[in-house]
Image (spheres, rainbow, N blue to C red):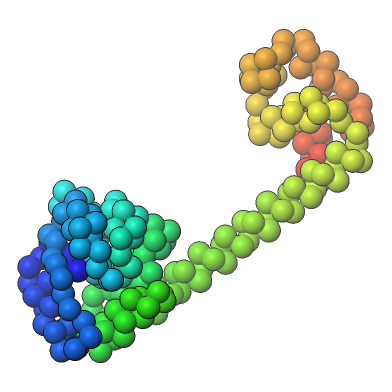
Length: 215
């Protein structure tokens, strides 16, 4: 199925695909809303999905279309956020207009129909960068969790003191901590006094540094 608001683009794509005996265009849609309805009715093996369209754009419907068809995004947009969003939404492939020829389009369609992925070089580099950033974030989160676990074992804070300490590290005032934990400010001050004593520090800044292991 071809999904693009430009009839000239759809005609060109239809012409390219017509050269292959194993590919048949079963439907065309000029906007995202129509694409979802047609995908549900026709269940095409592959949907070539544009992004910039009236009524509903590609990003807003990719997850719905992907329920009924393997999606190969075909668009002129190559913004990192769009590429990542389309892939998260269920697209199996992403090609940018001007960066592929009819032969590559057919290879991509066949690969996506078989349940494989197909990314243009530009898209692949964005995907790799996103995976690296995600891995770095996950490692940073794991490191932070390990530091907190070690700090809890080392300093012996109670669960409530840990709650207070977490909000303190997030920059909340005594009043804000009291509101969030449904405590009085006096109780918060008492908890902070106990925390300072256990951490052997004299103020909030030193407590955060000691608790998080920062220098």
